[in-house]
Image 1 (cartoon, helix red, strand yellow):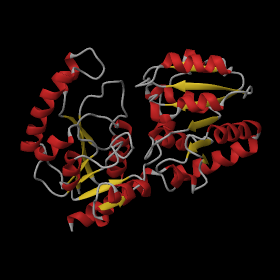
Image 2 (cartoon, rainbow, N blue to C red; image 1 turned 120 degrees about the vertical axis):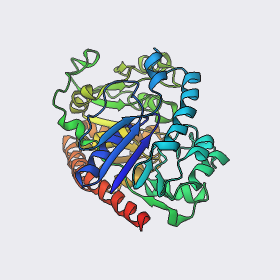
Image 3 (cartoon, rainbow, N blue to C red; image 1 turned 135 degrees about the vertical axis):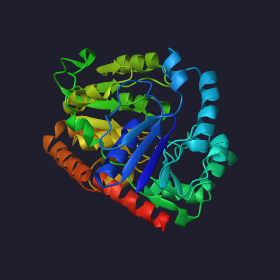
Image 4 (cartoon, rainbow, N blue to C red; image 1 turned 60 degrees about the vertical axis):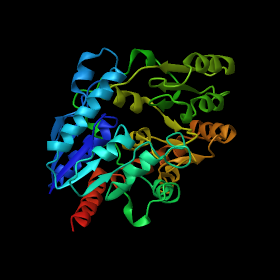
Length: 371
């Protein structure tokens, strides 16, 4: 079976490449069609081919990390037309992202079957309750939609109006490749020297992720310090720093993109990983924490409760600062509780959220679509 995984903007390289590697390990012939990643190194191909067919000129010539928007727009149209003409070589084409849904729905190659995994579009921030016509047109152009959670599948049926039989739930996999990097970097200098316990908030710092709530919940937790690691996007970092200072919270900020090589040392040092999101479908940060077997606290948002159902995380109400504070305080004070959560997280990463299982379920779906 020949499978093409298509992510033109390279928004989710860890997911794309983990899925491609797992499919290849299962015997599929896999090609990842994507663009140069703007922010650093990506996992090396493991048994699959990579073709950078999008945004090559714009990203190579522009000094800004995401390239010139105008240049990207022009190149996007040209590259989509080229991909439509001669880019498809798989028995199955599985799209992970499409940058301009209303346009791309009209430019898709006619090859069938084709699938879409709508990462990120299922947050309330991603659409205003119901998807616009362009996004719905893109959904309708697919033979199947892969949701990363039961929550996501229900949203696609109820809010997007998709027939339930076209929506298939295949969970996200734990990013265990990060635990096997051959040359991990030491802990960043900004984070060196922590003596107490560490509560980690990792990834892009965006409003829906509730970093402000986490800072408030850390008030009075003198045995631990907070690490906020990731590039701010739509968040005033000065306000977060000022809030931490005002509340007496010991907080360190690493406000930049963090490479794969830096991730192991950060997660290994963390005692608790916190995801107090106001909104979510799923999160790569959660599946990184599972891979490292860390005690995890999540909010009751999106698909997070489905991970909690496996005992692999502790849950508090979305936006409930008092609950979050109590849960963090209990875990900081109770090493046995942290150990139980850590063991459950590691077990879930090896079983339900292993890429072997994720790939197996994808292959079953591909075969069903191929008849």
